[in-house]
Image (cartoon, rainbow, N blue to C red; front, side, top):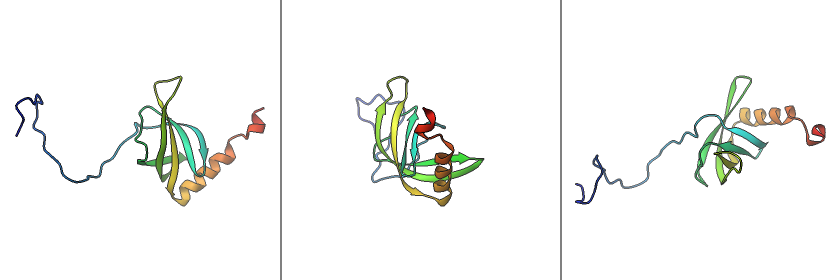
Length: 113
């Protein structure tokens, strides 16, 4: 049943209770900083703070999955994207090993000077 002032073209149904859903962050993101405990990423869309998102690292063709909580979201200053701070809350052994390998592959700050 629609209200007289309702201009929607389709009928809407009232929903009671919580429902599970999935959010796709739009594919690949740029990783700006990575630690065994979390990451700072650059994403094209803002993610809800406190939401839990799946994270997939692909290293040598092997996917490694973890769950991460969005800690903060800020607009990036130079691009049309967002800086998203993630805290890893549930990781697999494969994910932890992939992060460790990536950290050992990247140059240390002293090597960059």
